[in-house]
Image (tube, rainbow, N blue to C red):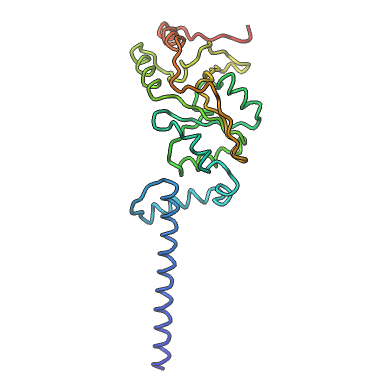
Length: 239
């Protein structure tokens, strides 16, 4: 009987040690994944790792890395190249002709720039989550970039002029906003702020030769002046 009990105790002890080893391997794997995505190394707590897993479970991990070309070095380098001195935004579209039109004519947005443009940074995990939430909107990812200096300068000019209830993107237009058939206000961001687009399925990159994130136009200050005077400078396209 004692021999049998000893065997059971040894077996259970070995099994417990095995489980601890497997758990340790799992934690190391999670930490390595998080580190590779965020570029950060720290002591991850259990609840933090659970939070990461819950986010990863919202989409197909394998599909993101093996079915998408977006996170390959050349595409990431193209998208995030100006990240240190610019704000970078992305927008998805289904039709390549629309992407080409944005490159040549500029980026149209209704009322608020942030309805269709997502801000991204060098945080790969955050970028991956945003991409998986939006990639169904189209294979073509438009890359927009506005320099920090331009943002700072015109934000300060708007504040000096007392212009409120508008974002800086609303004055970065060289043509007056128009009302569409739904009476929404449509703005056109100049194509100088469009870096290009990426087909996130094939990895194809199309650059915009006119891209200039530090572009400044006399029209931008004129827009602030009009808003200061209380004139919304909107053209009604139904007229």
